[in-house]
Image (tube, rainbow, N blue to C red; front, side, top):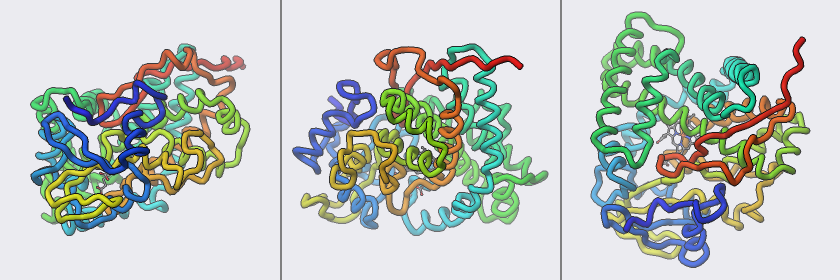
Length: 403
Ligand code: HEM
């Protein structure tokens, strides 16, 4: 029977799976059994997770024997994809250098007015609609989706298509053949978009790739489409999940919500975002690697060719890095969390995710009377996707006074 990924269901919905927390305490580097019978290591402590993710002797290449695929979809999907996430140095560095200038703190800060406009529009739309509403569908999903569409230059009108494809790609229990077909469909769509942008460029990332990389022959259409697919999928589901789960966690800790709600200091909201990222650790299939040489992590010898999984959720609850780790404390300095990973593959989109989340929580805290419309115990959580998420988040608020 497969032991990993492990379920959070038996414990607090916002905490790491209880079995992983037990291993953190009793066997911090230990083996788990996967669906295909393989037995990679899990590494659960903060310092060990960082040491592992910074070690150049581990590989992210899913085609390497011993790479820990968490299910059949992961094997079918990742073995065919060559995005940043599947590349080792020096190929990884070369491609990362290409994209990094698009995601610097400075460049992303320039998107602030557009992000604020998107957040305001979506929030007004929700508040003008039926009360209560599902915050996931009405707000948490459209905001990051609109932002990444603007950044890439993907028409938002096509969202029904690419959101459906993205769902097939991120669901763990989907048929592997379906996931591969969905990925190919999205690649074909992005390839034709890049061709159109090469002919008629606009001020967006795909246009720049079309002109600077495709037209010059430096990158093929396929390579640009695959990179675009990673950004499109990674760019909206993760942040959508962080918005909805983040609000659910704040609502479950009313005194913390009250602190956010009453405090207009942007530093407090920014700190709350870091704390929520730490507390929730939403990418629960974790960071997977395969050792290319014998390495020692946390006193345990991991042999060349063995799979190893860095567990960010337990690392983010390690008391040696975060005192009283199970307490949600929006005043905590939590920016050293590993929710965005660590080392060479640390999240490329983290500045964007941070800015979006800061604008979002600053807008949500100003909605009068915003609260859950159901008891927290009634919320349903989705574990069968690459990201942990709340399925629906019914919320209510004080109706606006008509003018
Ligand atoms: C990588 C988390 C938002 C693009 C990663 C990794 C994590 C992560 C943990 C490292 C995976 C590994 O080491 O194997 C998150 C979270 C997000 C978020 C929690 C939101 C709350 C975004 C956004 C974008 C993005 C908005 C793009 C617009 C990427 C890319 C990589 C990546 C391209 C691959 C980097 C590389 O391999 O060099 N993300 N991410 N992410 N993320 Fe994010």
